[in-house]
Every structure is written in structure tokens, then in C-alpha cells.
Picture: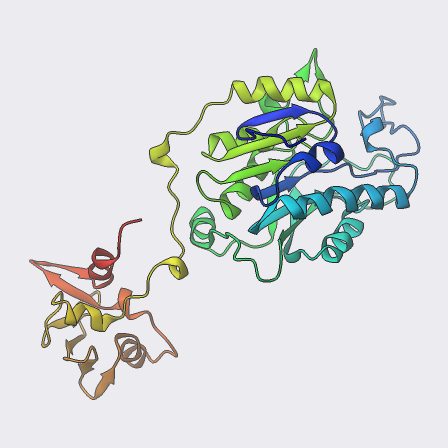
Length: 357
């Protein structure tokens, strides 16, 4: 039996069974938050003798490492089958399971791109004082294969991070406050992930209208963020209590207006346009003077796309670097042309010639 009409739906079922019903190469991205197999032996007690509401649910318990590995291999094998050839997968875990998961990911032919550390700003304290406080979880990000042309919105993530390259350590709080789902004051789900974490994952590795799967949907965070950001989603959740809470949460989620969903295009995805093209297309004429930002330096444009400044001649990049005494320089942003009484970067002329997305 094949599941049809998957888009923007969640189902109450066993992932190991439901994944087998999905056609090959269906999803652009998979985000998985599987059971961690925490192996908790005893109740955790705070110094005031109150009991910690830890993860002791049956769905997180396995007979042995062997049974957990078999479970992991099965759902990851199906995930590989239903992931598009240029798709990618994120799996989150803790020290209890992530190393076992990582090995199986590699065994199945996925290509690991990053291990990202989610450093929790407000982790649960270590009440027993027998080891370091567990203040992070690990996310493995992998493409379907080494040859996959996976999505990575580098420019968007750099802009998101105040024009600095985003690193693989993310400082984010755990889910709390109004975002945390509760029923009569009790947490609905013991391991609800914060929307901020999924926002970053979805923004980094998908585009508008991409299709995202969460095979262990839990409280529905992946579907909620996907809906907000204009992506399609499909989720599977085994526990009926979580499924019903997620369904209600998704229905109450508002979509961000389409006009705000555009993201920065990666430079490498834009068609290359050399400076010489501006000359042959008549945008800049030979003999035109171009300047640095303060108009203290000028150069003249030659017929072949090279420029001359005193004894220096060459490309817009080479001459700018020579003037600055630097190894390299982006000539598109260094050089400016005059419009009336103002100067504008020559890169603006290049952008005009590029086809609109």
C-alpha cells in the first residue's frame, strides 16, 4: 500500500511501517529526532527532594544496543530510499545514541557534511554531581550521497549571522515559556525541540516549497516551522497523545506572507558575468573613469575589459589589489562609477544584467 497525497499532512502510526509505504525519492529534506535510548536506571531527585520529570517513556526504551541499532538501521535505510538524490538529512541525538547513529548513516552511503553542536543556554543541571552537566546535543547533517548537489543557503545563513560565516556551534535555549506545550501544567512532550533550532535547520538546507519529512514528529515542531516558512511537510508520530497535540498546534500556526519568504541567492548559483561583458554590451564604454569609494583613486576602462591606473594594469580585481597592497580584492565592490554627483559600485551594473529569479 502506497501513501498518497502526502503534502502538509501528519499521520498517527509506526514509522518503521509507514516509511515503507512512501514512494522513492519523495522528500527534499528529512529531519529526524529519534528515540535517544537514554538508559535511565533510577529516578532523578533534586536537592529539595522533588522528582525530575526526565525522559522515562516506553518509546525511548530498547532491550539492548543491538535492538536499537537494528531499529536505527531500518528507519535510516528507508529514509535513504525516499530522499531525493540531491536531498539531505538531519538527525539529532545525545551522547547516548549519536555515535551509533553516525556509523549507520555512513554505512548506508550518506555523506556527512557537518556535525552541529546545539549548545543549550539553559540546560538541566546535573543533580547527582557525578559528571559534567550535559549542556549540548549533536546534529548530524548529511547529503544522500557524496555526489548530491544538496541545498545550503550560505548567503542567507551569513546574513542571519550579521554577515559572519555561521559556525557549527549553535547557542540556543531549550524549549520553554509559552512555546512549551503543557496539559494542566505538565509537559505534553518530554523532549520538545525549540522552534529556533528548526528555523535554522530549515532555512539553511531547504528552499521555498521544498518537501520536508519528520518520521518522529513528536510535538510537531518540524511541521510548524515548515508551515511558517512556506515549505511542505509530512510527519509520522506513533504516540496518539503527541499526534493530537501536534495536529492542534499545526492548525493554529500562521503562514508567513509569501512576499517575506525570499532568501539571498548564493553567489555560486548566479550566472557568472565578467567585467568585459559590461563593455561589449555597451553598459560601460572604453575610456570611462572608475573610482574608489572616496574618489581619491581612479582608473580608465580599456576595450578588452582591463583597467589602467598609473603603472598598474589588469583586471578590476588585480589593479584594486595592487593599489591596496593586498593579495586579492573584490573589484566589483572596490570600483565605483559616477551618476550625477554620487558614486555607485560597478556591481550595480552587473546586477542589472543578471536574469531575475
